[in-house]
Length: 371
Image (cartoon, rainbow, N blue to C red):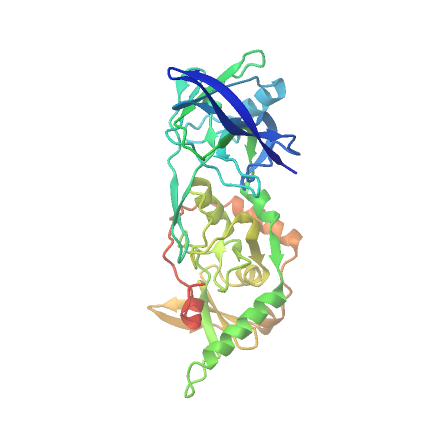
């Protein structure tokens, strides 16, 4: 367990000698204990373990020195690319966060943070606004990638200088990590496969709710789009969060692409939190996408949980009834066949993703709340 103790520091100013009490970390079980895992990265090495930022007087100053090992240099160089617009997959992340011990905290910058690496001032990533449905705006702070300013020689010492403006009651820690960006296919193949039975039960419940809306007309079927709300193109890997109450899915590749640039991890359908750890691949939709024609952009679900493909034609929904085995009786794909499907998706042209966060689900209208 992480333990926090108060240490007394003595320092001298123009007004005499003063003392202050600052928190210090004693014997953490892991240097990464204070930092949340980066969803799209894996840690290759801890270059500088988690260290408190101590400030004396009106300005904080922290000097960090580290050397890259030969294997670290090889990993960085082997991941480099000739494309100037594409970052290396192996990076050096400088991370800051508030010092608390009761739970993991998101990255957070001290006030007026400034960073120099080997004498070169770095431009810090701008904080990203994130608004969850019904909640206030929160700010997302990103790790600072300093690999472009590092000296890629094992015998050379890299020096990082950090300055900030101390704020009473706010204490921070800093850590430096060698990380590698994970491939999208690797991440998606590791996601949980949502049970067919759970999706069919959700379908039946929604059909039952819609059937009770009117006493005169029984609505026993409903339409769900196969178009990703992020790219406005057909989904390849249909995903949603476990906590999402709607049936609508979004494409996993597009979702990872959006959150690589703006890691807000918010469902584009219901605008609620959808972290990577909560994502599931809907096997029913994966089965549908594998069996309907390429120009099919929707599906009609029936009260018994079965489905038929549909197409939009000038605002109207046209139901096309396929052979019975396709619509009702086929077995959903296994994890191995799903992995092959993800691999095939990677070979297709890259789709421009538009970060749309104002989409709504049919379930929102049915439930009367945003879900």
